[in-house]
Image 1 (spheres, rainbow over the protein chains, first blue to last red):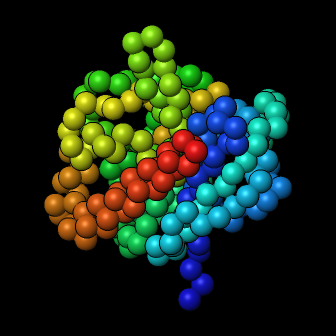
Image 2 (image 1 turned 30 degrees about the horizontal axis):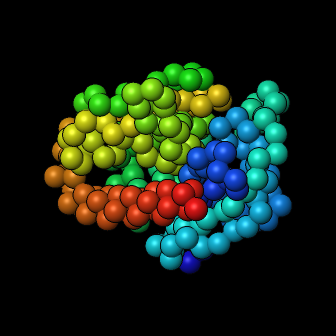
Length: 78
Length: 145
């Protein structure tokens, strides 16, 4: 059976200047990946399992750092 | 993305059968909110929950003198589910972030009617809701470090 796997990810921003985000995604996040939420771009520094998987859902935690505010192009392409 | 494709990516509805997702899709209403627009107001009553289909929403608590941001909820997240369970006042306010948000709205009455008609949906959703709350608590704990 080729069941699709989805990930619920807790993004926590290092330094505490942002409350972080929770987002469901289709592909496992990886260190160095750039993600956008709250109109800003962040870089992932670490990925770990936050809770054991249930069914076809994985529960992950990603620590990230702020890189820059998103441009209008970033928002359009999101 | 179609509503069926979105709902199967919403953890609250994980492990529901395709036909059950279609029943849920039938009670969802689309809503689009612009940048900064309020979705939920703290200390008001509400009888609906929201699913973020696109964009994101900021959850924040309004204190006497200032507001404190708690989390940003993006695609696939559920907003306002607590009021659906306890019928209480909204515990926080929610507004669309800079990019705005596309939402699906589920009214509590329609949701409970569906759960009464199909207990399997009710059981699965309530179990997933407990997982969702645990996840949010763990996220919250990590932001406090």
